[in-house]
Image (cartoon, rainbow, N blue to C red; front, side):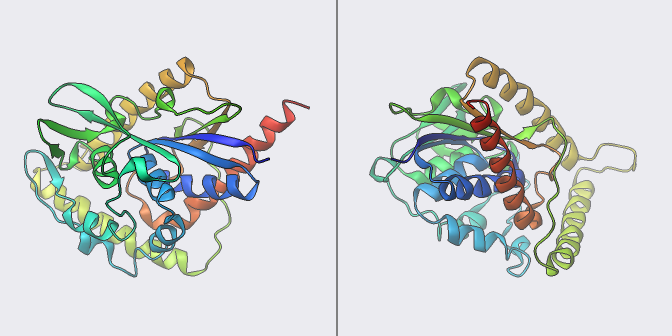
Length: 294
């Protein structure tokens, strides 16, 4: 009989791509994932897995530069966010069918924050697309999602690793994946020669994006912390501290830690590398867990 797993996936932007490698390794080693609970990127990867589209999503991530992903970004520069996200999420609907969560084959839940009513919300019923969209609405970056009298933003604002919401079953293992750990980074050998070239292209686009933001926000000094990095660093510090408190309060059976220095929030050009980091980390921490019982 396979060992059942209740899986919790943290937010972390592009670092959350490592969740794919973790999931693949868990399945390879014979674990049965019965439930997935996630925040932000963890909610996205977990939701796509629950829909049975993870392989297709991974393959798409690996071709981001070829698809000119930046053409999918629709800048809004409104008071609610820099990016509306309509184009990105329109593309994402190829992987996220508008299916009800309660009709999925495994239990799924996403965490978001209702900024109007000042509370975190567990989204475990209704449209999985809306649940994911709500959970990944990074404040000041993606515009919030309005549903009735609620305005949803990224769940990481209050709970970036929702261990307390994990749906358990008798005899399961609670495994949490934290992609914001304050540990040394592991850099695997790159599998494809073309990755280096793709990174150069993507880095140029990121640089152009940052320059555009600096122009909008009138940043004049190179020594100043520009708007783009200020957002990232502030959110990262906040979510990291909150996540550590949650881990200490609700310790999982296995905690798979992935360095917060593995990549930056928007380094999606490192998809292949992050999947391998996730896979390696899963192998490492699962082996530690087994040895602890020998």
